Length: 329
Length: 286
Image (cartoon, rainbow over all chains, first blue to last red; front, side, top):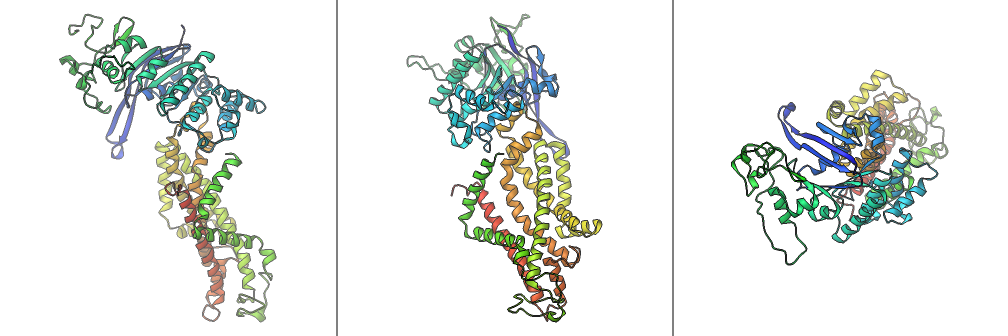
C-alpha cells in the first residue's frame, strides 16, 4: 500500500492568555512530536480523551492550525512549506468533516450555495453544470435534490452531517479528516453516517484520518490507530493489536472503560484515577504516571522513549527500549 | 447572500418586531417621515424659499398651517423640504459609517492580534470625542458643505459600528463553517464578506437605526450653530436657529421644526429598540 500522508514529528504549542503587556505567557503544548502515516484508501484512527490534542493533530494537517515544527508529507510533498497558491490547490485533495453539524454549516446559505461555492471557486464545476454536480453529490450522501433550496436549520443533525460530508466531497478529495464525525449524533444515526462513510471509502477509494474518543467507532472504521495522551502519541499499531492486547497502561484503561457487547465478557477494571493533568503544566517524566497503576520511579523522572514491540510502537518504560534499557520490565 | 436568505431573515425580524406596539408605531412614523420627505416637492403647499414680506412672522392660519418665518416663508413647506436634507444627510452618513466601521470591525475581529489592537485603539480615540465636538472639528477643518457635513457625521459614527461588528465576528469566527471555508481554500476576504458579514448583519442594522437618530440630531445641532448646509436651503436645525431670535414673539418658528426632530428621533429609537429586542436570541423564541 502506498503512503498518502506522512506526518513527521509535528509539534504545536499554543500561547494561552497573556499577562499584562505580554509579560507572563502561559504555554500549552497541544502536540508533541506526533508522527503517523496513512496509506491510500486506508482509515487511520486517532483516539484519546478530550483535550489530548487529537483535533489539533487533524487540523494541523490542513494547516487550519499552523504547527511549530515537523513535516506533513502529502504524496511526498511537505504541506507545511507549500506556498499560498500551492496550498490552495492542495486543499482540493484534503478535506475535513466536523463534529458539530449545527456549527459547521453557514446558517445564512442554502445547501445549494454552500456546495456550489467551493466547486465554482476551484473550477470543479461551471455555472452551467454546477447544479447537476450538486445533485449528484447530494444523491451520493443520500439526500434528495430538493435539499438544494433549503437552509441548514431545516435539516436534522444526521442530515446536516450528510451535508457536511457532501461539502467535503464537493472538491473530489482523496483524504478526509473526520473530526469526531458521529459523536454529536444519536446512536442509530451514527451507524447510518458511518455506513455512508464506509461506502464512500469503497466507491471513491478515500483515505480517512478518523479522530474520535469512541473506541468502538474507531475499531469499526479503522485499520490502524494511534492513542494520544496530553499531546503525545503513547501507542500506535493495528486496531486489532492495540485494542485486543493494549500495551500502554493508558490504552489498557481506555479499553477497560469502553463497553464490550458480550454479556459473558469478564469485567476487568484497570483502574484509572483522577483527571487528565492540564496540558499547560504536564507532570514530569511520563505524563501518565500520576494516574498509572504500574508507575515506577523512572516514570516520574524520564519521558519514555518510543519502543517498537512487534509491529507496533509504545511509549512506556514497561517495555524494553532498543538499546538494552536497564529499567525495562 | 442570496435574496431569499435576506428575505426570510428580514421577514422573521419584522414579524418579531411587529408584536411590540411601540416598535411598530416607531416603524410607521419613520416610514411616514421618509415618505413625506421624498414626496416634499408634491406635498409642500408653497415654494419653501419664496419670501413674502407681508407674511413676516405670521402665526399659523388656514392658508399657512404652521405659520410663516422672518422672511414670510411657509414653515410647513420648509419642514417638508428640510426633512429631505436631514434624512439625506443622516442616511448617507450612517451608510458610510456602517460600511467603513463595519468593515474595520470585521477585519479587527477576524484577523485579531496586532491588527485588532491598532484598529480598536484608533476607534477608542474616536469614541472619546463627543459626536458633536467631533462633527464640529471635522466641519471646521473641511469647511461647511453638504458633502463635508456627511463626512463629519459619518466620522462620529464609525467607532460604534466597528465595535458592534467586531464582537460577533469574533464569535462567528470560532464556528466550524469558517474553518470549513478555510479548508476549502476560500480567501480571507470571501470568508469575511460571504460567511461572516451576513451572520452579523442583524446587530449592525439595529445600531444603524439607533444611530440614524443621533446623526439627524448632530446634523440639526451643526446647522443650529451655523456649520450645516448653507441658507437659504431649509434644514430643521437651521430653521430653529433662524427662529431663535423671535422665539418669544413667534414661538411657532422654533416649535414646529423642533417637533419634527423630536418625532423622528423618538420614532427611530422605538424602531431601533424593537429591532434590538427582535434580534435578541433570548427573546427570539417567545
